[in-house]
Length: 61
Image (cartoon, rainbow, N blue to C red):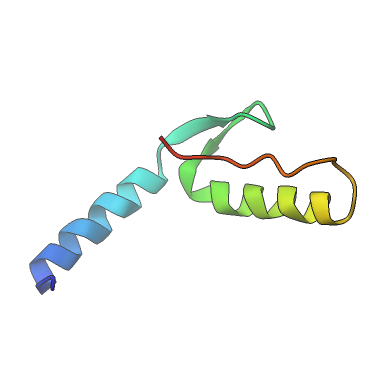
């Protein structure tokens, strides 16, 4: 169980991490890490509509 101080520390670290810029392997463009869930949702939608053959999963390392 986290105390308020611990929760605050974790949330601040997560918010800072979401501002990191990474290159998305499928789009070959740089994007904020916080945008990756939306980018992956777009890829899943394209796959379900049949616009792309497979869903290119992204794994955070």
